[in-house]
Amino acid sequence: MANQTHGFGTRITIGAVTFEEIDVTPIGLTRDDPVEQTSNSGTLYRRFAPAPLKTKNAVTATVYYEKEDIDTIKAKLESDTAETVTITFKDASTLTDTGWLQSFEPDAQVATDRPQATITLEFEGETASGTDEWTYTS
Image 1 (cartoon, rainbow, N blue to C red):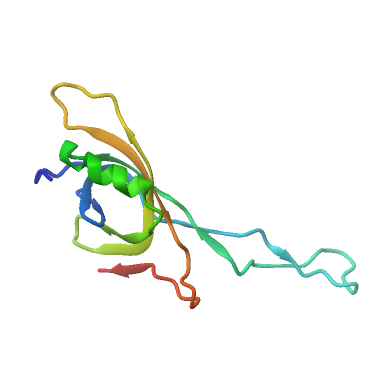
Image 2: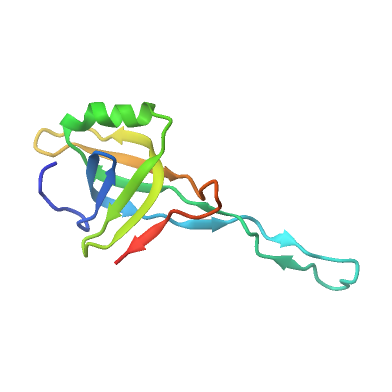
């Protein structure tokens, strides 16, 4: 990977492939719909509680990639195995989780530009033991 920094200086690494971001939307969380808690004793309003389950939102990014990585990128899309995904921010802080490359969509090629693509990363959620692997290190 060329040592040029663009965008916010963020790098996204999936196994042996590193992408330089142009723009990125980091992992987010969405809670399931509220759980109704209304009982027969309620007379005016329904009662709700926050849902315990959440979904990790996909990461989407526009990135630079190296043509030499195409075979490795293709292999990641064909794999059924999640692996460590690390997002390294400009200040050297990192966000790490277990996920996979969900999509890789190359942009139109321009002779003077480095190859660009839009990628989408998905994440497992919690492990079989019920722990979350999402870690942030500053």
